[in-house]
Amino acid sequence: MDKKTGQDRIATITRTTKETDISLTLNVDGSGQAEIDTGIGFFDHMLDGFARHGLFDLQVKIKGDLQVDTHHTIEDTGIVLGNAIAQAVGDKAGIVRYGSRILPMDEALILCALDLCGRPYLVYDLRLDREKVGELETEMVREFFYAVSYGAAMNLHLKQLEGSNNHHIIEGAFKAFAKALDEATGRDGRISGVLSTKGSL
Image (tube, rainbow, N blue to C red; front, side, top):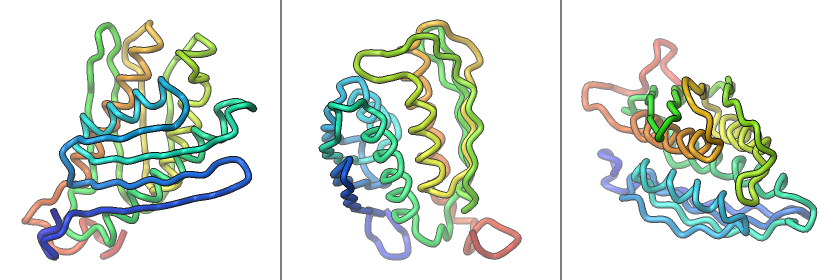
């Protein structure tokens, strides 16, 4: 809840193109409730894990051109989720700004660190060696996080420290991202304004 307004920080965004029709609502002050329907089962599972482990409330409904492949659906979801993160945190006054997590998922160990700095950048080092997990094309994992980082204007680092199972690596990345984002969007009463020597983010 935003301490200044007493309201939850919520963003609802719709985006319609010839390739996708997306409606997404994100509450960064939620409790981990999710209603996800992207048409891609494994992607739904990853977004559900993101919501649950980040304690975000997330509703996503997508109609995408899955008869082509998963690319547009996953990339556009990343864009919209990133936009929702940026809109929900608003002027970023009082937030911690930085977040990080090293998260174990069976044999996989994933590091995520991020900065809600207003400058988009992605450093991605997940070593996936299968074409698909379920119906999710594994090359789209990078495209998703790239789209999120630019949509939210965040600096995002994802690094695989250990791991051999593609399911575990991907799931670990989504959960580590969730925990890092939960930390970064959290508030600290000692912070006056935004946490920046520039005076703005």
